[in-house]
Image 1 (cartoon, rainbow, N blue to C red):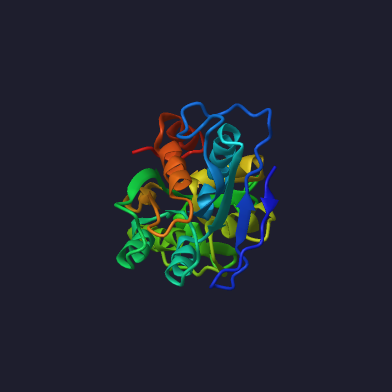
Image 2: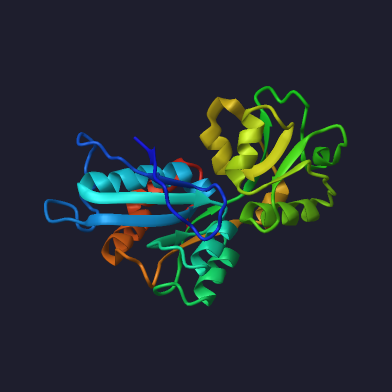
Length: 264
């Protein structure tokens, strides 16, 4: 079961740091590096884009199940906020970004151990509350003054993609709220606080019956690729490498595909 764990970060945003609590009856990850009695231990901290929350939490629990002495902790937030935290000195072992631009912030600062690897991709959809009460059909509807619309802030990968998609469609939207990460935008749709939002396909999938997703043809012009890297000052480099290997393994890639991500 997930639990909240306090962490003092240089950026004082209310960002979630979640620890995976794998139970003893979970199936161990037999292919995970270090699995078994003499496996990995200590704590490994993964900074990851908010859109990875569900699938990474599951993968962390699997790694813990194969390594009973290991504690996998996550800080899920907008990639731009995470990159800022890392460049300001926040301790972490792994960084997974929702686009390559925010990964470059970290690598350009000399914080990466090696080259990042792209492990998934994502595109935007229009998310509307179940039943689509406002009758949204396409991107042009996001310019309707009577609608309440949410998008991510432009510095966040989902916000940068939204700007590109709207420009490609020739739509000038006037969003009512700019959210700090894609899950915040999705939550407003789930709660019925907005008529529509631009979020990732994977977020629509994660929301289940609470929202409906409308495909956006122009989204193909703004595909976000997700890179991951171990960090040069990782407190637990062995566990960091094991987590990245699990993400890139056949099992990890299948989990990402099941969650709606595109696999490279």
